[in-house]
Length: 274
Length: 257
Image (tube, rainbow over all chains, first blue to last red; front, side):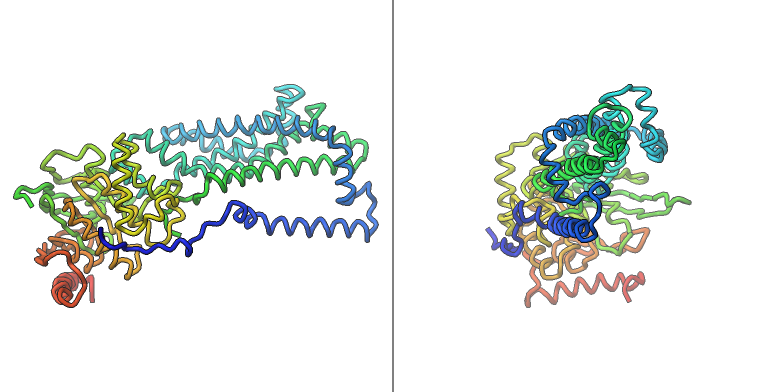
């Protein structure tokens, strides 16, 4: 065998551990958040802000601890509705994106409709959704579905269209079937786009569910917020809001872990070079 | 090499719609490629080399003329090995998985394919990158993995579209040498499209020099040098001589000053 052409040096291109990669992505944001929380705490004490107007982070933390069981119940209601809407929306978006990939006519018909739908303020749909689907859990699921679908679909379509010409030529040269190209190339190519969309969709799903609960439910974090607002209870309002934010962060953190473990390739496949 | 051409390209030309009218891309173009022969097509950018290669691979249709294959058109995937201009590796797959993609899709013997793939990676010194994802490969490795992917199934025809263009000059010289020695083991019929005159002469039995767009053959030079060809004291003057003949043709077309 001939002498090796390229002496690859593993040490020159070390792979960072999962923990190092996550720390690199979150470290700066976490540090800034810590600074902001500290500034908030100091400001409320120094400026003697009324707790009813703006509770300090420590008061929030104590209230979270005290009301944990009750908040968990409401969080479960909102979270489960948002998750259901997100899963349904992602599945529907994947199906429609795949169909529009196959049928150019369908793509031409649906594209302006989707763009138009995206222009409608979602919050304006709440009364209509409550009217059509009644009170309770359904409006939260439907609203989450709408906001997630309109976020995920364009990203999936962009991902499936992102396959470089050279990759398509290669598959053509080996006489790959359309199904093989779809499952082996287009679906993996759109996964980074999907992750990007989901990181936006998760907070939107929670917001959508909470907004629906403002007028269309008697439980959930949205209902808790509107109830606290009607009683001018800013501590409970901030507590519910904090739980909502923590859930959104947890959802995005899970997506980050999934991305760092399984989907570590760029959104636009380049061919191996930097 | 046998006497009958493996590929006969007869009066092939191609035009493309540029939004306003049909523009000629290349042709008319006629060339015979014999079994076991290495032919380089060297020409300036946009003269139609890549389009011709894609026409031979069956990726684009041939509107005018004919491309005839001695054993019928390669309808099964593993009879053509294509190395595209950009490596076009699937970034979510490892080097090994990229090389085995064809075997996976055609249901070929996985063990044998793995064995061949490992040998090819070792040939290019990339054994340690076998399980590295393509998006994390170091610079210079991707073209080699793309070449391994193209030749792992011993194709009947190897089509290379500027495969070394993304390498720096030193790496290119090493990879050219390794590729040449690898090709000499099987002597697969190969067609290389390149703008690198020296690379074309180093690898090819014949060099077809193309004019600017629409590309036509100016001349076909037979490179009568022993193999393996190296840029060393004994061979460099002769290689330079062939390169100068190609440069003279380019000068006559105004491609070079």
